[in-house]
Amino acid sequence: MSDWTFERPPALPLPQPSEESAPFWEALKERRLVLQRCAACDAVTHPPRARCGKCGGMEFVWQESDGRGEVHSYVVTHQAVHPALRGYTPFATVEVALTEGVRITSNLIDTPPDQVAIGQNVQVGFMDVGESIVLPMFRRG
Amino acid sequence: MLPPFRHRALHKNSSMSFSNAVAIAGVGETDYSRDSGRTELALSLQAIQAALDDAGIAAAEVDGLMKWFVDTSSEAEVAVNLGIPDLAWFGEINQAGNVGAPLVAHAAAAIHAGLANTIVIYRGVNGRSGRRYGRGDVTGQGGRGAGAFTEPFGLLTPQHGLAMAARRRMFETGVTSRQFGQQAVIQRKHANRNPRATFHDRALTLEDHQQSRLIIDPFHLFDCCLESDGGGALVLTRPELVRKRRPHRPLALIRAAAQSGPGQSSPVHRTAARLFAMARLERSDIDVVQIYDHFGPFVLFALEDYGFVEDAGHFVEDGGTMWDSGKLPANTSGGHLSEVYLQGMNHLIEGVRQARGESTSQVPNAELSFVDTGIGTGAVILERSDP
Image (cartoon, rainbow over all chains, first blue to last red; front, side, top):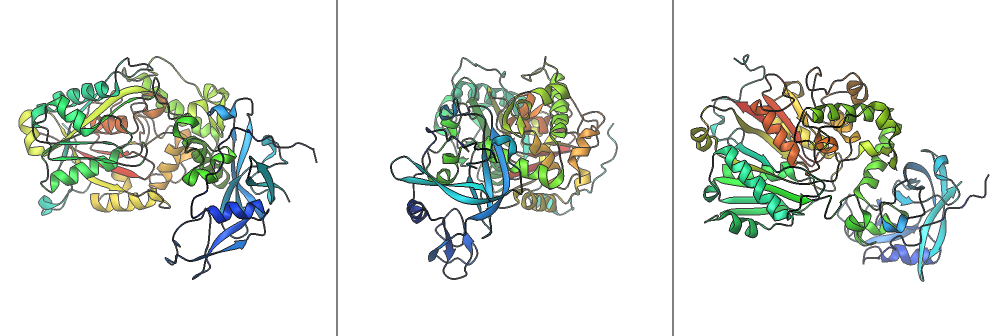
């Protein structure tokens, strides 16, 4: 295992929480990955939404994810298609299929872009960015 | 002389139905470039005039205008400049580039319902010298909305999400980058036959494609659409009106139109089901297709998802989408990859030309011309109608 570490382009946009998503970002500050679950039918959704797509319920509870999943897909950005990326390419972005059945976009903090593979088992970690934002990041596991 | 129609004719009592009630009677475009030196409004006005001349219709006869929501020239501005005395119908559809066929559906429905007689759809854009859609600082959401869950991790452009889907598709079906390249090469060959095309004078080999730099892996440079300056326009009206003006020319009638809304899963399957049911046609009846190629790999995915072929990778490898020798010629003007990136407008123009027998890569005896303008968000089937 190499000691390669993902260097996040520091000027990437930071998440701007909405009314629906604020609890998700608040929980991350406590290093917890939480998912929105419909109080009526238990369907788990991500990203958070206003109304359950399955049953129409508008009440939700926040359940802690076990943070495990596998790489569903990934891309490697080679061209700096945004000023924030200059000097930071190539880097990989992954879609992780969590065991709860939803997918979440993130980066792998311990895997160089040329070693990312679909099906790779991963588990959540956390990265502090900015003053009060924590991002869910993943590592092999 | 054309051979007899191979496909099923419309039912006799279909005179009240939407099918074939409205024609795309005129098409027009500007020159295509990297730096037009004109405003987007000027591009639209120039393209509209060309389309009206093509149809034999005067600007003062136009009573409807429709546009892409993202187009910067308002209907009011265009109406004033065209000298339209009575604008009975106007509107735009709010998505991204993928609303060409939905605009045709809306306009045709309005004409069919009697709310307007002659509607112009236009798109004029300085997409290379002005706002470039390939730039994350242009198309990004600044971490707001859905962007909160993607942009902080480096997904910043439409290309990122599409590359993510393409990678998964490669994993699931085994389709390869070389096969994506085959489609890019075929479209370039079409562009080499089209004097309007941006890449008219430049050849492309499979090795060129494979060796071109990666932009967002798995997409190479030549999987990506152009960024272009240019304008295009369509004139929709009742067939009886335009037949008098252009008595000797075939007309492109709108046989069917369908769309599938944003956020829907499997939009292609939904659109395909509605479209072919309305048209009362089988996939095998279609003679030629234009498919929205923001990224070339999606032509292959759409060929499969619309039900045209089972294995698009091998289909394009065998030249299945070539204009002259393929079983289902695709993107015969060069498409977004090699003609121009007019967000589906150029696909609609080419679809009309195929139905009228006027393409620079004309499919012999084409009667049914299919156009997708957004990988399932909308599609139309155009039918040749001889004088």
